[in-house]
Amino acid sequence: MKRPLRPDEVKIWGMVAATVHPMPGRRIPKAEAGAAPPVTPAHLPPPKPVTAFAKPPPKSKPRKELEGIEPNRRHRIAKAREEIGGRLDLHGLDQERAKAVLEGFLQRAWNDGTRAVLVITGKGVQGDGVLKRRAPEWLAAPQLAHIVAGISDAARHHGGAGALYVALKKKARG
Image (cartoon, rainbow, N blue to C red; front, top):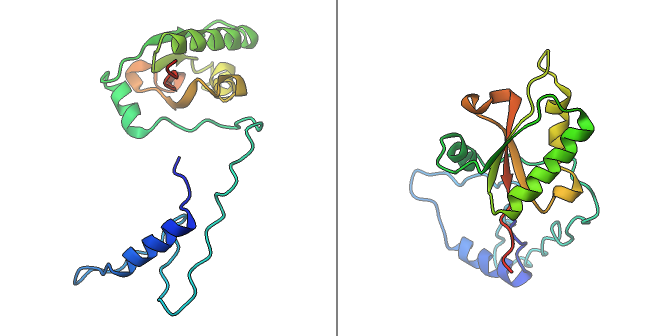
């Protein structure tokens, strides 16, 4: 995550940006959300520092949803350019047992230094299986926050909608 710019950095960036002009025939792009504040002429007071990112969100809140795996990383996993370090099939398990097995499997994989795993949940009888629905909730749990980086549906040859790629965070050295 990027850190917010300090007021002195905003001022310097404003001076640099004021010297840049678009090439002939090009338009100035519209400001994006979260972009640096617009540059003001020298005769106006400098902009106030942006404080939207001053406070990080409290750490105690549980994650509601996990972010997906970065598209390039997901592509590398699907094409076997990034190794799938382990596979876990949850077919035939009830919810309690599946959750416990999943948590134990992810902890062992992370301890071994694995960066990606495949979790096969199955689709359920009509495509709305309980394990398929609940697995993303379990993966977003606070006790797995230090392990799980993101999840995405698996490629068709790895199980498609009945399986998930789970990207694991790097284990801290030490």
